[in-house]
Image 1 (cartoon, rainbow, N blue to C red):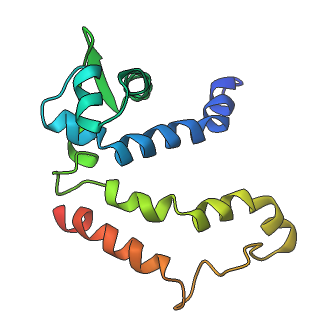
Image 2 (cartoon, rainbow, N blue to C red; image 1 turned 90 degrees about the vertical axis):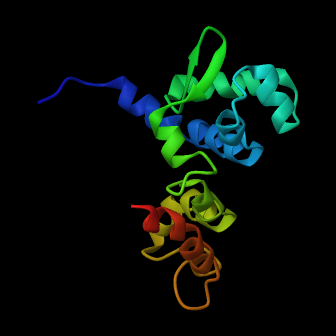
Length: 149
């Protein structure tokens, strides 16, 4: 039997913060800036068209999470971000974000307790079935990663 691990609980409770940071980085094209050789917070911020302070905080968060690397004030791709987050990579998973973090998917997560209580979805709109357009978005977003392997 393993020892009690508060880090497991803490990491799970704060996972949404890492998700939000990754979403912001994808939406701002931080990984594209890194691919284009921009390494400092100032250069990345300029490439992304946002203030430097926010990019520095975001990039430091991504570095702590292991999604990018930081050394001597410069940020670079990790092997994982170069393959799975760089927009020019054929295996980029970034195109799946609009589906995986869509309002309906996030709402389903928010309503999980109520769904369990009811024994069926608490969503007002279905999450599955032919009439759900989000699945088309998901299928289209999966095309590049599936065909890259």
